[in-house]
Image (tube, rainbow, N blue to C red; front, side, top):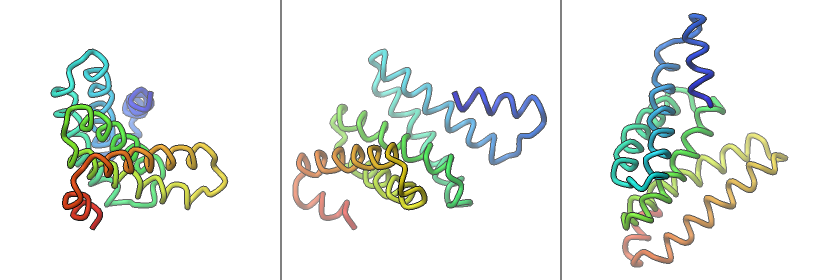
Length: 144
């Protein structure tokens, strides 16, 4: 959906290098969701691995931009779930920790947003589930 909006912006000339980077990241993550839905988790994980650093760089450049932080938090949660299902628990925990931090920041920015509160609860529950599955030493390292 967001990629369609970005394509419209491109057609009207309102598109800069950062927008193009976001477009690439969102496209990768949407294609990753598709690959996961048709039972190709390894291809989906590879696509998430391309999308995540792109969005991380954009968010680091402008940490107050709401849409990009929201996109990154959702991408991290999607990746964490897929990585957990594929047995990559430490990767899943790392992504989930990032999703929790981003979701908390989004909720702090809009404290009365119930959808944000639910999303944070979802991220936290996923993180707790992962922590329960991992050996104690890995959880301690991941929490730092």
